[in-house]
Length: 294
Image (tube, rainbow, N blue to C red; front, side, top):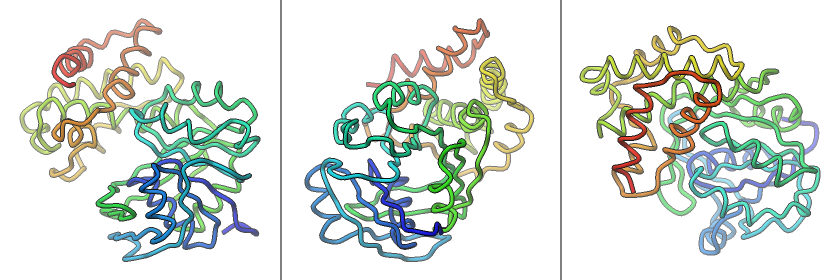
């Protein structure tokens, strides 16, 4: 833990945001969760409850609010990409000031948006690998042992706080590598599980050629973006993931909810076009999903 408690605001206390908020608050930091009025009121009264394979059953007191109304040291953005624009209305640039701003979002395109909207803030790239979901108001379920956060340079205090709270934290100097490392795995898995409406094991068995092709194509785009992507390493990791794994995009599609297709698959296609990288399998799957999903 850092020498003094941090004042942290978490925008979007869902699975990821709720896990971050719970562990930071349990470690003694001053945590405020920004959310819709009913959720904010519930959190303000009842706090957060976490059920985790790694951390056990925990509760934490947090403050719930609709908008940022006081100075903070750090802001963690943990909304879905589909809800980002609306959620940012809860954080006025003047209220955020020069605080550290760390998005834990899927995709790569949000950094430019945040830096333009909050020019005084220190926006630092971040990525999280975790399986966490919101099971009810203030209720978070964390599955498995994975809880790994990567941050770019410039957020030392938050990095120390997250490590002290129990996350596996790595500070990386390469922003492109940090963001694309996650997308190199996430994009193939999310696109193929959603297209097949099946968990990863079934995708590997029935659509292995497409899955491998997308892994290789996304890695090629990542290298064009300056990230040291290794398609063989990503494929080995993908082969070792439990067969029952589903993606959040697949679950959202099955529930008829907006998906992060554009933040994940669309971002790959746009980067490929910028660099002239041919991604025929990825393009086919993204275009099929664009036509099918609401």
